Length: 415
Image 1 (cartoon, rainbow, N blue to C red):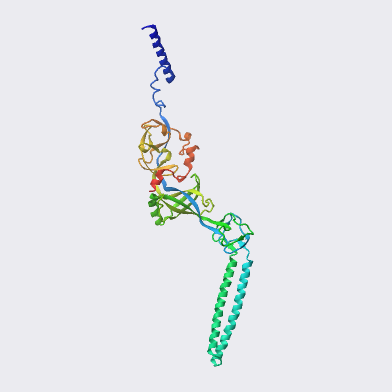
Image 2 (tube, one colour):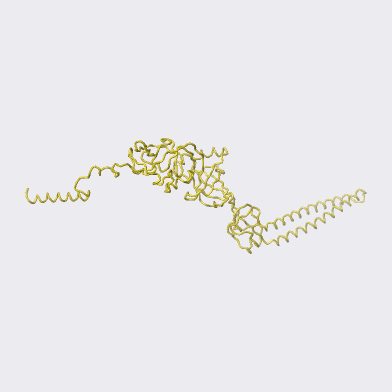
């Protein structure tokens, strides 16, 4: 080997060693201990909780719209000048309360005129009836022709018809006068005033004076998939009072609780859904007409179900599973489970798990089949079971019926 070739070989070795040092941080092979898992074979710290038996509601969630029980356009039934508005905008009124008044003087004059005509015709009728009595006496004595008696009796019947017509005119005039006082047909809340005092209003106007909405009680209309109708319809037809909760848009605050009122009589072929209507007392006015809410219909309550925190559920290529902790060996094993009804905090396990078995609820992302685990102190991790003040504790303090379930399992369980 000549000197030039020797230098080429030495340069290649130096370059290869530098590259190895750059990528591995050392020119020597990595120790076997460092080539193992990131935990170096040590147990993985996890948080676990035991599966328990309890009750859980089977619910169907849907987006709903709040609708007033009755919506009435307050408008005059006669023409006239608006003299007074008796209530403020947005104020609650009761059925029969006077909302507004029109100028009643023209209609009072018409009533007086009709009443005077009635009195006049009543006097003519009374005089004609006296004449009939006289004519009959004369006819009995053959002092008058029967034709005169018949004519007088016809005149009496004519005046009787006139008096009856006058009474109708008086009643109509009195009714028109009453219409100058506009009353609330239902109890509810007044909207913004659409016409100011002093303006002329007419029965033919389309705007009206107020819009009155009945908000106590109030209803929510929502649509559910037609497949879920088989779970709802038999119970509704049997007379069960199915509970419906209304939540805000973010499904964090429950606004009101009511009951299912009715089910529509046909399925929407375009969306494959059927509309339902629920009624709420709305005593605190938490629901407002045309407000969007999340409606949660409780179909039934399943008792003695096996419940685990929803954080324990894992999903993979083989479906849903949980990591079950072997307390003696301090290892975990994967267990396929079949999910049932669920809420935001817990889910029911229909198959694959028994009560009392511990499942991992935190740290599962670092686990595999047969991995060694170390149960972390519940208080240090803010576990609900330990009553810590962490995020998990706050979730645990909420009721199991808390926020409406968003998983597909809840809808499937209601079928």
